[in-house]
Amino acid sequence: MSGEARTATRPRGRLHVLARRAGRRVPGQQRLQRAWERLPGADSLGRRVAVNSSWLIAERILRMAISLAIAIQVVRYLGPTDYGILAYGLSIVTIVDVVSTLGMRSSVVRELVEHPRRAGEVLGTSVGLRLLGSLLTIAVIFALWARDPGSPSLTVLAVLAAGLPLMAFAQLDLYFQATLESHHAAAARTIALLVASVVRVALLVAGAPLLWFAAAGALEFASTGVAFIVTYYRRRGSLLGLRMSLPMSRRIVAISWPFFLSSLAAAVYLKVDQVMLQHYSGSTEVGVYAAAARLSEIWYFVPIALASSILPMLVQRRLEDERAYRRSLEQAFRVAVWIAITIALLTTLAATPIVALLFGDAFARSADILRLHMWAAPFIFMGAVLGRALITEDRRAFELSRHVAGAVLNVGLNAVLIPAFGGMGAAAATLISYAFASYVICFGYGPTRMHVGLMTRAVIRPFGATAA
Image (cartoon, rainbow, N blue to C red; front, side):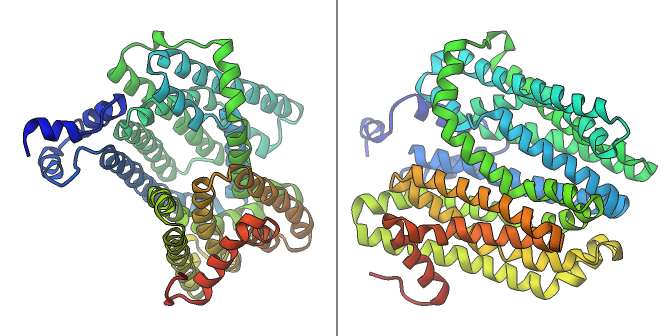
């Protein structure tokens, strides 16, 4: 093929140029890049997106491994009560951080891609909105702490919240997502985690009290923001080009509110149980439950990675042939649910020795909670695939509705079950609410009854042929 012909087949536009530039800037990848370019279609944007996504997945796995290794030692060192206080504070901060971001991540990335000349205004407004949310949060938390300064849980929460203002600059990550340069963002987040991990190890060696571990959490938030400031400065220059504008604020908030509700619902799923446990059962029960949830939630990156990888395929299949689309969707459900069932079965059998080995005898009750909590995984894994199918079919309103309904159910079940059963009640609430939002709710909406059939066949026919 001639040079002109090859050039004619290449995608055009800003995204293509940025994607090629991002691919060349990966350190130490020159030989891999040359081999990649010899593959058919190597200049397609899809391949550059795949490289970009691989950085995100690799970073998540690395962060998970480092975080889990350090968390195990911190849990053993602090014990159920002190770890419960820390877990409660982190749960509140997680929910609050979601509120301060206003669900604007996807909207900001789209704005950056569609309007690159307004990048300073878009990014500046995004950072400014998150910073305002963080400052408002700190004001509320410190007002609560001032009313009861002797409360250990409020003191820990106030220390953790002190790192949120600098964390607002993590919004600069959206620039690297928009330009397909996520390896820079991955490096920034990893450096911040390493700094905080070194500090936590030093605190463990020094025998530091609980409050210092809360300070280490605040340091991780703050150092993440600083790492993004430095990375952005090295790639783009001074932050003085960022500016916040009222019209852009209105626009971002107006187009982001559905994503905000969805993100808030996801945060409620993950963390409200620990917040409510603190209220109904106390810090020790939170610590026992949080240790089990930590082991269960480490697997949640798997459905995210799987669902993200199948979305382009589902879109293409649906455009080509509805029957092929349904076959592909059923196969995706089958792979997802049986990975989750396998993990849940192995965890059920090995929960007691795993908990004893990792956390010690003080957390023995975490084993039963882990067994029950882990069985939410099949519904979480299928729910991730269902979410991508609903996006493919342009049923975003139902996607939002099911998450909100599941979160509301989760809160209600926790209010009923936690006073009676403690951590086991919270685990049961998690299982039931995920089953409802990922499976049961689909019975009540005509267009999604097809998905119920596909999910059911995927479960009962693990090795069966997909429906035609």
